[in-house]
Amino acid sequence: MTHPVDSSTILEKPLLATLNGVQQKRPPIWIMRQAGRYLAEYREVRARSKSFIDFCYSPDLATEVTLQPIRRFGFDAAILFSDILVVPDALGQGVSFVENEGPRLPPLLVENDLSELKSEIDLDRLAPVFETIGRVKAALPKETTFLGFCGAPWTVASYMIAGKGTPEQAPIRLLAYRNPEYLEKLIERLIQSSIAYLCRQVEAGVDALQIFESFAGALTADGLEQWSIGPIRRMIEGVRLRHPHAKFIVFGRGSGANHVQYALKTGANAVAIDWAVDPAWAASVLQPLKPVQGNLDPLAVVAGGDQMDRRVDAIIEAFSNGPHIFNLGHGIVPETPVTHVERLVKRVRG
Image (tube, rainbow, N blue to C red):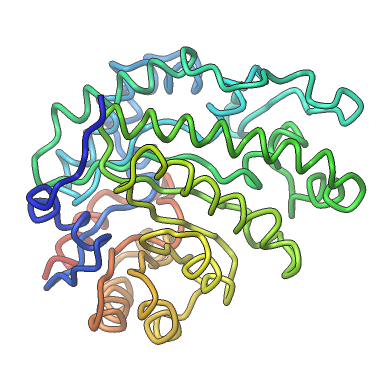
């Protein structure tokens, strides 16, 4: 069953209104990785699961931690608790997580020509994720936008090729030079898989979707369209063939001036920016094109105090002439004091 977004829903949900180009008196706020280790209640729930991937596939636990930051801070959006690597997991490339080190996958081998993977994503494997969405949707306040997400094909493929996170994404960059035909086939598989996955998220009840291109900064200028912009555009177009009103935020982390390309060419409704982007530049160049999301340095929230306040005020002032979603320039870090997040939310809301 689909959940179309009508005009009354947009009016009730400030963040969804911003994605439709409506400027708010104060920007709506949510935080990337807002359900995470900086919260004691998250750590307590996480301890109940034997592994992180099992955590992602447990509707009881995933629902609880998705809702925790909404209860504590009243953010304007909840984002589904999951991971971008459930897509390769549902393609048959088993994913595990090593504590304090990150994900591990059996690296894809070019000579196998993708035979290690399923030809289509196994949506039954992801059924617990869709169950989580339904449970969260039923529990959220009516004014809270519910965000689903997935990784962009370039970012997800980088893990699939290397079997883990790598400095500067060297394995996939080398593959793009040595065997672009193989990489094109992998990216195509991920485009189609991500379309199917995101459509099911919309049908389960999310209001909007964020696409994470976490490794955009590893791309050369001439590789950007082929490996990132084009695949994301096709994903968005594919979802909108089934759900014409689907709303998207695209986060091309580290892409600098190429944020303009994400705004102009992907079809996204909003562009998220990292902390290295000058808000004044983004306000003058990006914001006339699309609503902007961002971009406080997560370590400014760790530090807290007056310096955090000044940076919050500067970001809000910079984007005050157009639609803006307040967020960090990347995910909140575990050592962040909860009191600093409380102060941040209060500051943003004036």
